[in-house]
Length: 225
Ligand SMILES: Cc1cc2nc3c(=O)[nH]c(=O)nc-3n(C[C@H](O)[C@H](O)[C@H](O)COP(=O)(O)O)c2cc1C
Image (cartoon, rainbow, N blue to C red; front, side, top):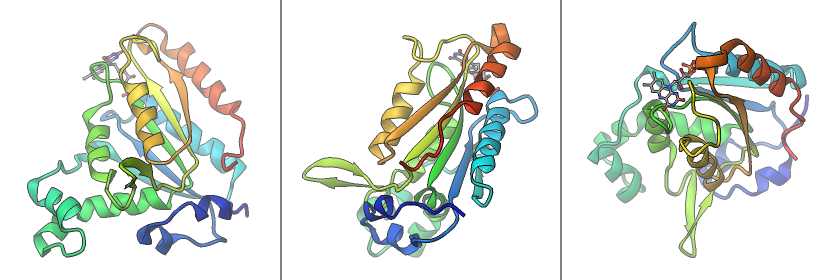
């Protein structure tokens, strides 16, 4: 079994993170899918491929899957009051409003590596993923402010993003999804943000999917440097 470095663990300061940390345990892979399509989804096919690649390297790893397309809650006033203003003393209604968020935050804080399937929708991230972001960006849990500067608290060191598009090139001037997503994960504390490019599926689906699979196969692992 390959264990996570304690150096990475030492960076976590918050109690929720500390609670789930142990020095010797199987690697935790968190798989996130944001496409509302299932059998025809290229990003889901590629998250499959990426998770299989990781499991070849780390056969004893645990995989947690969170499907973001099932309809996540949107932030309500009660949720915001509980997560921002009454963190120490939430009412029962606030606790109920934060339940799904707490579950997803626990999965994310526990993750050593995150695998995200991300189609571009209307030049940016799909609302399925944005809904997730609004639930897991939690002050005092996944990030904190130090001297007025936002500081990420996730222990994961790598996130792999399986990017799909119809026509817009990854990193082109019409792609607002990849710069946003890179910034987001780095703000939460994940330094290594790697994109797998499966853009242009409208014109060259087979070839571009195959190239993305090759890119996954050739990734340099391990991922916990
Ligand atoms: C609502 C919607 C909006 C989309 N917007 C864009 C876009 O802005 N740029 C683009 O290149 N492709 C766009 N596409 C195409 C998807 O990114 C593409 O079909 C991708 O493969 C979807 O991922 P999936 O196969 O995992 O479902 C859009 C598709 C849908 C359904």
